[in-house]
Structures are given as structure tokens and as C-alpha cells.
Length: 70
Image (cartoon, rainbow, N blue to C red; front, side):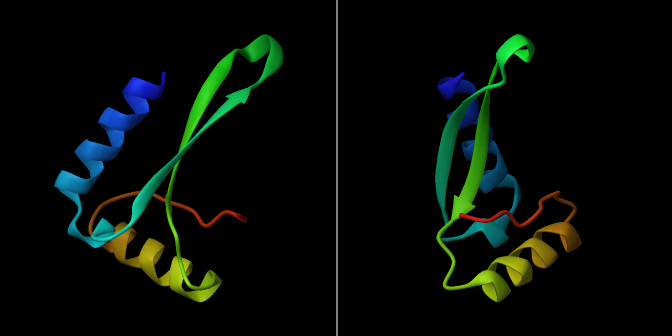
């Protein structure tokens, strides 16, 4: 749900300082027979290189991420 995604963002920001000034981007995705999910993304980034660098830092701090196209 939107509320769970917001809670997940708050939890991640509290746990990982590397998220700093980033803002959440929560998108609803209807997967048909698999149901509805909410995707939590963070940004914005100046470019792909900045996104990869932030993801690398997050992984080094024990988090998990991947860089997706906008």
C-alpha cells in the first residue's frame, strides 16, 4: 500500500545516512493476476553516474538497490 511504502522510506532514511537529501518516488504498479505492488524509488540524481555512485554507497552500508531508468 502507499502507506507501507511511505513507512518503508522513513525506515530506510533512518537506517541509511547515504539517502540524505533524496526524495521518495512511490509508484503503483498493477501486475494483473499477480496483484498490485508499490515501487519505492529514490532520487533525483543529476545523471546515471550519480545514481550508480549512490547505489554503491548504499550497498557498502549494508543496503540493497539497483539503478533503474526514469
